[in-house]
Amino acid sequence: MGSVVLVTGVARHLGSRFVRSLRRRPGVELVVGVDTQPSEHDLDGPARYTFVRADIRRPTIARVIAEYGVDTVVHLNVSTTLLGSTSRSSVKETNVIGTMQLLAAVQKSPTVERLVVKSTTSVYGSAPRDPAVFTEAMQPKVLPTGGFAKDAVEVEGYVRGFARRRPDVAVCVLRFANIVGPAADTPLNEYFNLPVLPTVLGYDPRLQFIHEDDAVETLLLAAGEARRGTTNSGTFNVAGAGVMVLSQAARRLGKPTVPMLLPAVSWIAGLARGTRLLDFSPEQLRLLTHGRVVDTTMLREAFGYTPAHTTESALDDLARSLRPGLVPPRTVARLTDGTAQLLTRGGTE
Image 1 (cartoon, helix red, strand yellow):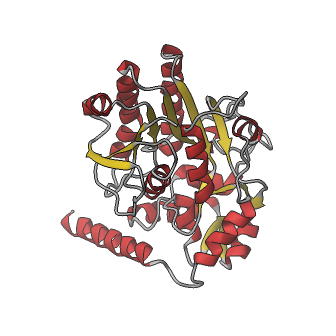
Image 2: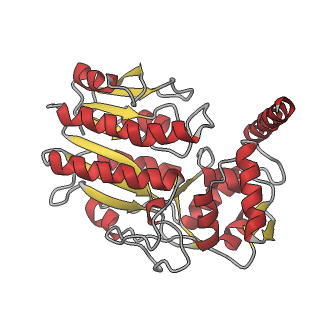
């Protein structure tokens, strides 16, 4: 593994967990964490760590890479939401413009040897005529038209362009399925935390999950040296073995479902976003209508790694962390704050 590793998006849960694990890996001398605010999580580890408060949309990221002599960049700051932000434009700017700025900085750097980018299986979209299983070489039947999925498609396009310009840099793109776990801060995890799960009447989509522990382990493998005779460069689907339909997931979580017509679920999704109850985006709604399943053969062959948690066991671990019938305090706080904002706006219009 590169001795000086720069990690973006360290304030979020996945970034924090990755940094903590990275600092315990042999050969890592320094981890440079970059975000607009420091992590609130425990980042302790033997290797040195320094936090740089920086916005990757700004050219200062090039100075950070040069100052610390970074040889490995792990880009995790591609996400559905930004901490403390409800602005879709801000999220898109950080995802797309931020990635472009980071790639420009890496392209000019003579020290960077490896680039790892967190992406998502959302790039395949969710449509009624999708293939049963997506491989990395397949194109979506219907391209994502907005939201995080569209951002991810654009980000991957820029990464491919970078890889052509800098063939000397090993580039790895990891398309993660929906990350779940006791502490994961992902939209689907928050959906499963609801006391009642709204579903689309007449649909029972097939779903795959990746446990947060396996997501961290895959990132560690991607950031390290490849096994003899293999390469960690390329694009890889990352998901736990097996498939579940939404109704099975609800039963395992002990959550009742409320089947509704699609327009009604769309209205509830808009209300959830407006009150900040959860990020129930249109792409999330399409997933919960048509589902998505990916093939992970390339991951096993290139990394020699099979996620420790299957799709079922990942969900079971989430189920053990939930208190039936109770809405998590974090969700209650968001609902209360969001409702207050709506009422305030309504009173000033």
